[in-house]
Amino acid sequence: MSVSLSPSLEFVLVTRLRAAGCVFAEDEARLIVSAARTSDELASMLDRRVAGVPLEHVLGWAEFCGLRIAVDPRVFVPRRRTAFLVEQAAALVCPRAVVVDLCCGSGAVGAALAETLGDGIELYAVDIDPAAVRCARRNVPDPGRVFEGDLYEPLPTTLRGSVDVLVANAPYVPTDAIRLMPPEARFHEPRVSLDGGADGLDIQRRVALGARDWLASGGRLLIETSESQAPLTAEAFADAGLITRIETSEDMDATVVVGADPR
Image (cartoon, rainbow, N blue to C red; front, top):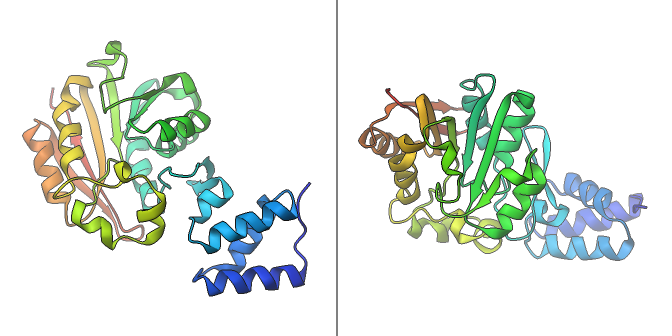
């Protein structure tokens, strides 16, 4: 059972959403109505959205690479630009490749890679946030390969030296810049998914430093970063012994640093 969207109801919803600053109020109203099973649930969802809760948390899912990714409250919402990370990784994955999604959040990147590449990859995912891990286990094909812990620490030791592609959308917002982010991110997403330390690169450096212990010969590490931070991310890759290049997409406003194991 769901609530039907009459013209009068749509007017009320759109008016409230616009007053709350929602730019795409008409689209949001239709999505909320389609997700609500009862009038009471509709009212609750609308109140949460008007109060500033991200639409994805209100709906319980986010659209990413053509998929509906389950996103619970207090879990990082996958961004459109991260589709560029998926594209870059997919271009490097061969059949039967071992792929690890570090800092996986909801598991959106891994789920998108699995959808794009089918059953041809052996996918593992890791996040330090228990709420994110619970979401990822709903989104990736094999929930038993989603691990809770700090970067590489929870991965099976049998993967050492055998990972073909490592992808990471590690937090890269400088600590002092978090206060400048939109309220939806600051107040409703976990700080651990945003805060990258003083220059935003603390986690990226740790990922790069440990990569060669896990990568197979010729394996690749891909990390999303910002255009301004990319030279420092590339420097961290080079310091870790990786052959490095920077890829950008103007359309998606996205930047990915790619490092290859030279062995």
